[in-house]
Image (tube, rainbow, N blue to C red; front, top):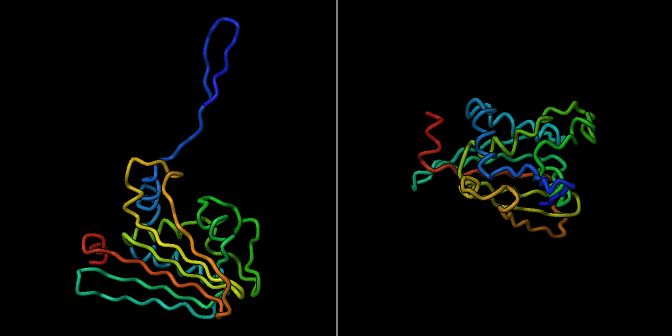
Length: 184
């Protein structure tokens, strides 16, 4: 915070927007109409990654949870893509690029709703992604985004290392019983 003084001893202070972490939930609830729309947003990301195949798997577990797995064989996300695009809501990357890198598909996920869709669907998110040369993964407990912390105060640990596995992305969302009632 910077304070600016003028000659009349009047004080003016400069502030910045500091969104609360719960903004992620607020936006997700407002922009994602239902669970099917949320799944569709995540599938569009696979299309944008030039995937030939996107699999959607639902696993009901004995501990009253639903696991939603979305896997694609697209080009994957690098550490730089995760930190500079996925974790940056409202980036204009797909608007600027307009088409996918290999198949020149018109980008579908231009609004950046995928991260909000994941928060809408469950309490936990694990993303694992492989490019031609690296592996990156991160885990988010969305409950941390409902506290009174500011968005930039919620830490997200990202693992990344070299890899020679085929490219692709695996999204795993866990919804506890109270969250997956949206499917009923």
